[in-house]
Length: 237
Image 1: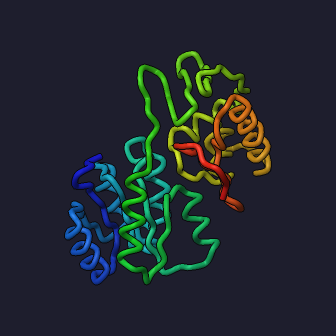
Image 2: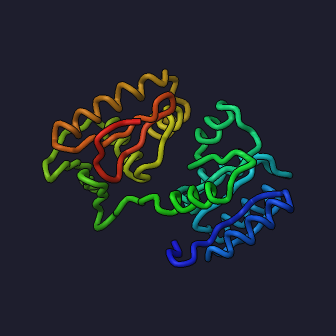
């Protein structure tokens, strides 16, 4: 990631919105690339992955939802923050966007101040630290080669499912995963399970981590899903 002048790919087909975003983001020091249809935007992201993507919901050739789905399916773009821009305000649409991997969701008309704040927050999202086969987030560390989990330096026992669940959360700390996303990524897309299965395993994993000394490691987003905190915190959402 370019920390000095982050590059933002804007995939938006409304000329007036394009110019507003190009001018104002550019004035703040961001490098801005514009694509005005879904196919061109997806190709641009895959060929030269940006630091962040602003993605309109309704696009010609390929919808924003489909663009986001394909971005999350590709290794090169899987972890790029994606903020969706849309005139839709229904809660179901927001959940759908988050469910296929969007990091945030801004409803038009939006204030530039709000949008810039969300962009900066998404760019600050931590990534997991991987060094010599070790994955570390806050008080939790995983030895990827030996499949060992340590919390505050203490080894803990996890089931194979809990281990896969923990790894999934650790690879994108602070990112909220819906229950359906976790079912797909941990149990497999063909898994015929109730989403409450996720709640049960999250509960078990949380107890394992907390019993070993982790401070409130897993955040619950009520009605949606879970995130692994990059730092300990006092409460849940």
